[in-house]
Image (cartoon, rainbow, N blue to C red; front, side, top):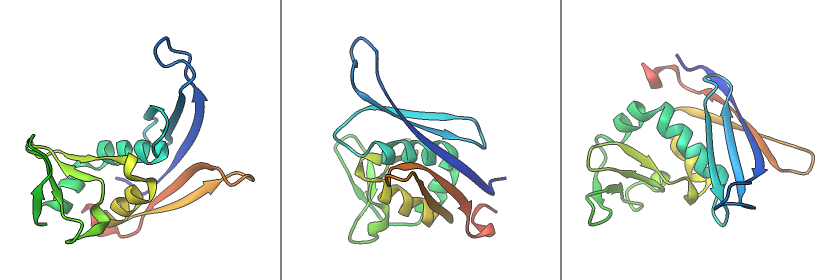
Length: 147
């Protein structure tokens, strides 16, 4: 049962052949010891790893959350999305043709946090003296959210 976890954010630089010099953003979940990472730049890398974490840890809850919401066609590949006019808190969320909820964290870490908050999660930002994000402490706001 999920009660709380610390999501540690760390950065490094790739030494890989095709990605040499690219930034790497890692998110480590202290509860599950799982690591999520992304490489590159020019997009919200912290949002991407938070989205990957939410997708992996809360897929069933995400499916239940969007089950009754009206959906619109997202692309010619059969993906669906929740219309921003209907509910803007689901920006960055799409539903694949097989029903899996996909989160595009490049839309922003705040968008991913809003989706997490819709699940009943509370994100407490953790940073260093320079104001850089070092992680999040995530707790469950409402116990009935995962009942």
